Amino acid sequence: MGLVAEIRKCRLCAARFAATATAHAPRPVVWFRDGQGVRLLIAGQAPGARVHASGLPFTDRSGDRLRDWIGLEAESFYDKDRVAIVPMAFCFPGYDTKGADLPPPQICAATWRGRVMEGLGTVPLTLLVGGAAIRWHLGLRSGAGTVSAAVADWRGAMARGVIPLPHPSWRNTGWLRRNPWFEAELLPDVRARVREVMDV
Image (cartoon, rainbow, N blue to C red; front, side, top):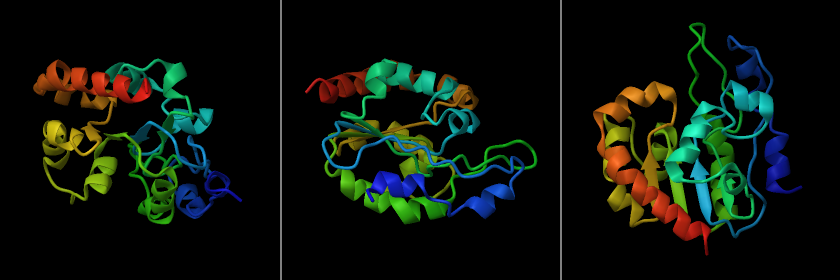
């Protein structure tokens, strides 16, 4: 059985999800192929409720915003020959009693992420979307300002083949307003680099 098939059968968090306010069953959303050769890795957080329903990553407003940020139309974004979309947790974690998103369960990354990264091999460009992906891939500890500082150092990260981005959730609109350099300086560089690796 290939790695993709293994992940799709994963039920490690069944009891955890059943105990959430959404009381849902696991549905791993896997969007990469076994083997190497992709040009772009999008390392996200975890599927939301809409993605849990659709089975397709980033089929929500956050996905619309992310595709706009990086300058990719849906056809290219979902091209598994060139793009792998690998969240820190493959399943929707659910909501808490107040309706807030629960964090990605750490057991998912502990179980699968190393194997996925090894299987993908060397990828020319990795986009780190959101705090969980940024901290894991850059080896950072949680702390106030960690994500903002990582995103602000995008030029240094880009030299290592990664670009940290805030989560494209509309909850981060305030952060974007407070940091106009993100749209004015970072996004043009991101779009240019994405075009460069995708056009090879």
